[in-house]
Every structure is written in C-alpha cells, then in structure tokens.
Image 1 (cartoon, rainbow, N blue to C red):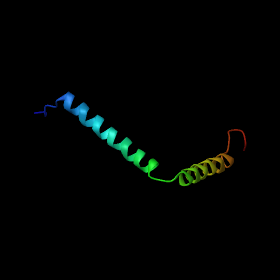
Image 2: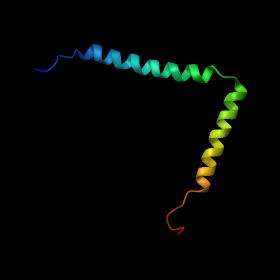
Image 3: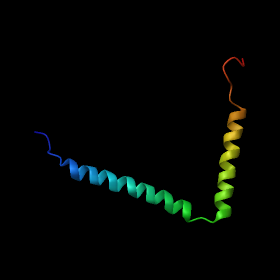
Image 4: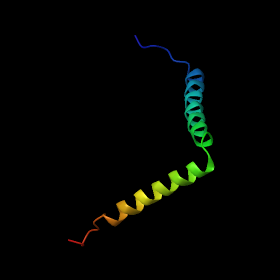
Length: 61
C-alpha cells in the first residue's frame, strides 16, 4: 500500500529547503569583502575567456 502524502506539507518542505539553499548562497556572498568578490569575479571571467579561446567551432578543422 502506498504512503499518503499531504501535498500542502510537501510544498512547504520543498519551499523551506529551497529558501535554505538560497540563504546559504547569500551568506557566502555577503560574508566576503568587496575586494575578494571582485577578485573572484575576475578569476571567473578570465577562466571563461580562456575556455572560449580554446573552443573549436564547427568548420575550424
């Protein structure tokens, strides 16, 4: 026999879980100094740029 699930409670649990994930991301973002955020963003941009330089487009062979 299947377990009966209250959809209202299931939705609330899912919303709480999602909110906790968002809160954890925000704690990480706001827990660092501005210079560290800028440095991390620059590192991400440089990595993305380097990856794009090494990408082989169709027809480049």
